[in-house]
Length: 167
Image (cartoon, rainbow, N blue to C red):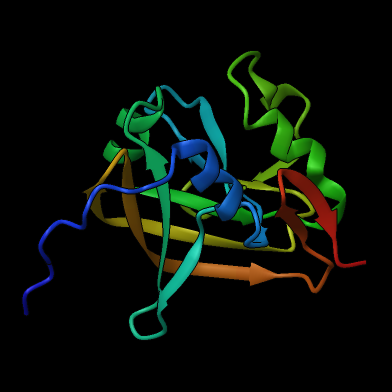
């Protein structure tokens, strides 16, 4: 199957306009977490999460090619996608900025492969790092879900550049 098409004509809009249009699509908010070889943890906020397949169980998310955590997530065998609950906007903010090491104050448990699972997340997916696809200025990560759990709670929503809740 041919998965590539001819290039589209150059856009007639700028990236700011495109970003504002994308902001009209309400998304859930996730924090992707993993463990480094030295035993420390890394996490980042992502709203680019989606399901791909039920059989096998596949999900996807994307990361900017210039992100300093790209080598970590590209090279690790596993990661956890934590779906944040409505009362966890503070975690989305903590993991969306570079800076202090937040793991001393963030409550978590370890998955069976030693990956951090954020306490209170309304769902989490422990994934094998199955494949990566470079597209534009991002890399699309496809994870094969090895384990998942959920607690029915209102999710954290991102829309129009702000956090919201369904509650």
